[in-house]
Length: 204
Image (cartoon, rainbow, N blue to C red; front, side, top):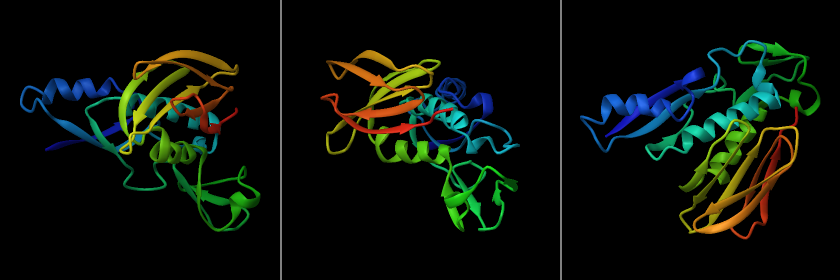
């Protein structure tokens, strides 16, 4: 049996799971959850999801939720309300969550579906940064890091740096001392040797 969670706005954080546990665990002590809604805003007026700043906030809050061992899976069941994608009809303006936005130009205006900055975070998390069992997590206001072990045994460590300065952190992951670093406004994935696998830059 799984519980289904919808997390919105201020509820989009790991501690929200505690509120559900307090109600459910006395009756179902081994309850796990599937998260089918996770938005950091109740509304998207002004199309904030087209900005890197919004994507960084989404990255931090989503990581905090995904770090909880009770969470079995997270997925979106509709778009574009989740701000992962937007649709362009190829005209002067593009329709984004029911609105139009002049910031979309050039290739961003080509007809079809496009990833927003938030969508790029979601894609990186799904494919690499959170693709495995959580073996370490350390959250923070502007910096967070974690590590997952994939089904093939590979360990990927990820560092979020949502500040305007480069950062370096010492971390103990799976019994190994590691030095993690990331440029300003970025998400960096490395292997256990410290070699960078991939980075996503989100300057604002």
